[in-house]
Length: 208
Image (cartoon, one colour):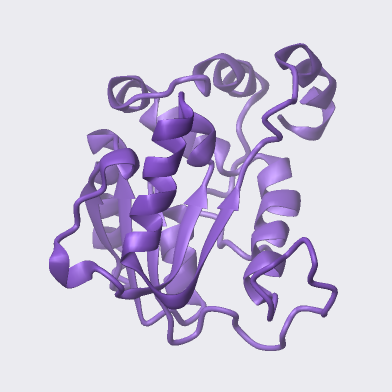
């Protein structure tokens, strides 16, 4: 069973896959507002179900935060049970809601796109899990003093790749650090920055 329960039983069509390959280059709120529904559908692609979901579960389950050096097997049991989680670039909330399903005590999802946040709120209204969602820019994160040092885990899945400069990347990481508890963890999934765009077509048979 996938780590993330599927919101839709139907995989994206070949036409939608083609559309997503061009549309997923969007990098700001207006562009994501325009592709909110197709981007939500992209979360059902095979590479997400069988690679991305599995990878996230394995990373969260590690006992040691230094994943490069860590050789210990994943800890048994739900890795986020009882934890407060901040999900940056949450999109339509698929991972926010997955974290709540496996026992997170509280989850706040933040995304720069009002339309993506609207989809997240609609999913929460249809099946209440206790997640909260708001519009915000992860590179200029302002959640209020009361939220500082509140979260055990900050998720940054497909976020850091949108930093256009080193300064913007620093701002994203600093924002995450600001809201983490001492000893908390920032967990991200990213493409390799050196991966040339020309190589992407090689991944099409795998659902990219």
